[in-house]
Length: 132
Image 1 (cartoon, one colour):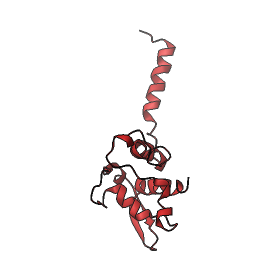
Image 2 (cartoon, rainbow, N blue to C red):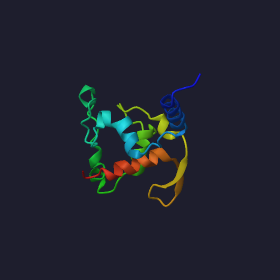
Image 3 (cartoon, rainbow, N blue to C red):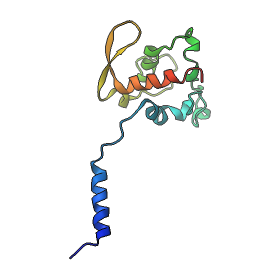
Image 4 (cartoon, rainbow, N blue to C red):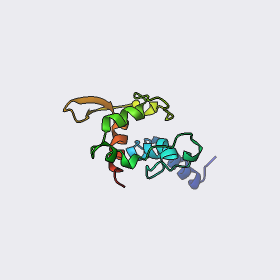
């Protein structure tokens, strides 16, 4: 039995597509997937889920302003990670951000600490939202 050439091409394309590695997450893609539902795409605390929460999500564009003009990177990552668990915390912990490769991260103290790359990427993305 001979297969039509279109079917052979379709099968070949499907096979090649399966070989392409999945897209590597970025700070923006992780933010969009894990944070925007509550914090909104712009990070202002106005996501689709915000109205359903007992506590309004933080406006992530003002973290530097609330910290004398300095972005609190380490505290922000601790909050995302779930390490910092203030009373009344409603934000979930994000385990997937802790998996995978680690990179050296300087939180401002001059010490390079091995830190999950996705957590660092999200911190950098949030840093870029300041004042917007």
